[in-house]
Amino acid sequence: MILRVRAAEIRQIQLQLVRAYPEEGCGVLIGREKGETRDVERVLGFENQDAAERHRRYLISPEQFLAADRTARGEGLDVMGIFHSHPDHPADPSSFDLEHAWPYYSYLILSVSNGIVAEQRSWRLREDRSRFDPEELEIPSDPASHAVGA
Ligand SMILES: [Zn+2]
Image 1 (cartoon, rainbow, N blue to C red):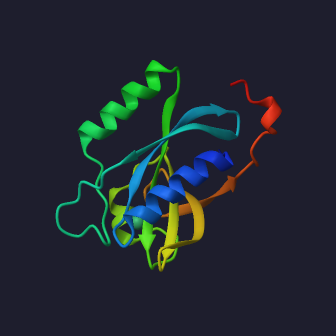
Image 2: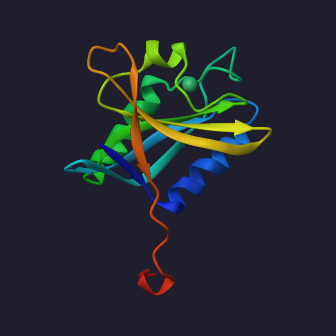
């Protein structure tokens, strides 16, 4: 599988996660799946709902997730993934991530080091939940300005 996130959406994610630093930030990726590619068309950023350890944990509430799912379906799209940051840690899934992830979704992790995005990687949990496998992350550059309708 390939996770394709346009440069504009990547910038939106990076900005949110840099602002959340030194706490973890999070949100969902909305789009559509075409064959082997997941095209992200929209990014929804969330307030980290973790009560105690936001510098190394993130929590998306069921209410946030359901609202995102409704938004996606209203636009004929699906929630395809979850993004979050690792402040001053590599963009590799933690044991906490492994315990709390679900199969199917793309997990985009950005390492934010000293307030700057250092690394961004996407992961998929195996069906048997034993481990994450890396997923290809493709970032097409912005379309030429004359191609934008408005
Ligand atoms: Zn994590």
